Image: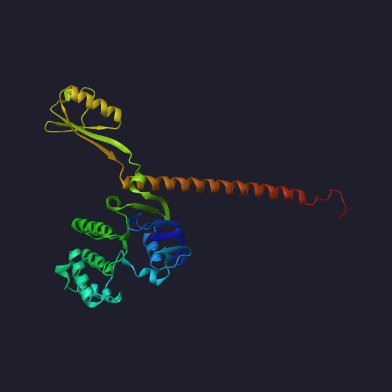
Amino acid sequence: MPILSFNHVAKTLPYGFWLRRKSVLHDVSLSVEAGEVYGFLGPNGAGKTTSMKCLLGLLRPDAGSIEIFGRPGSDPGARHKLGYLPEQPYFYPHLTGAELVEYFGRLFGIAAPERRRRCGELLEMVGMSSKADLPIRQYSKGMMQRIGLAQALINDPELVILDEPMSGLDPIGRREVKEIILGLKKKGATVFFSSHILSDAEALCDRVGLLFSGRIIREGTVDELLEQRVRYWEAACEDLSRADLPGFEPSAQQGDRLYFRFEDDRQLDRWVDVVRAAGGRVVLVTPQRATLEEYFLATVKQDKADRGAAAAAESTARSAGASVDTSGAQEDALHSRPPRAAAGGAR
């Protein structure tokens, strides 16, 4: 049984000066299995944060349902075993980092000795031990993100919900967060995180869901989505000159090493045979596969085209229907119109 599932979830929110309802989520369905890292991916404004607020009970779906640990998401007991880091965390500015993490430990009812031990471990894990006694008002955005991650883990959760956890972090911080996520997976925890940084998700996730304009447009493992297709091969050889390889134009040269790019594997095989026959050494053959970012952009482009075509077809059908209705109404009017009186008739 999935540890987390969305079942045909829809949500509208008030928008603009007149607070008209705008559809934010459309029939969102996904499932997250225990022990996996699931990437909830999409551009800004796709509906990721709204989905997470529905999951956490901060918003109520207009339609559909959400289940956590097999229980309704609206059940407070279902949320006792999860940790949450919002996209833009805001904490009491007068507390120190250590006081904040301990405060959340008290909210979970963790005994004082265990709470202090967990607090120290988590501050060390997120690289905030040296800043633990500073008031939060002095923290940078990256430091807020780190202390927020520590509070999300204070209850040793089975399900960790992270909304844009890489936001505001420098490259070192992003690498450390990746290591923390992988460490949680090794411990058996389930991680559900949103991101618009697709390269991070590609390196971390067992499965991903691609959200665009409030719709799940694809879901599956990274390998399933990319289908492991090779876009081209990069190859290199040494101990040969350009003249030794007629018919092959190098893409680059570094010292005595020549680099080539091949779109076709048969062309690559022929190049290998020529290099060996000429007495050279093949030192590199690397397949270059599509990245998750390239896949996502192509999928979004196709989705936009499909929906545009569907909208155009619907508009054409409506116009044709209106034309038929209009001509029919005109014909009915002609048949029902009373005849004119004759020119010399009674007056």
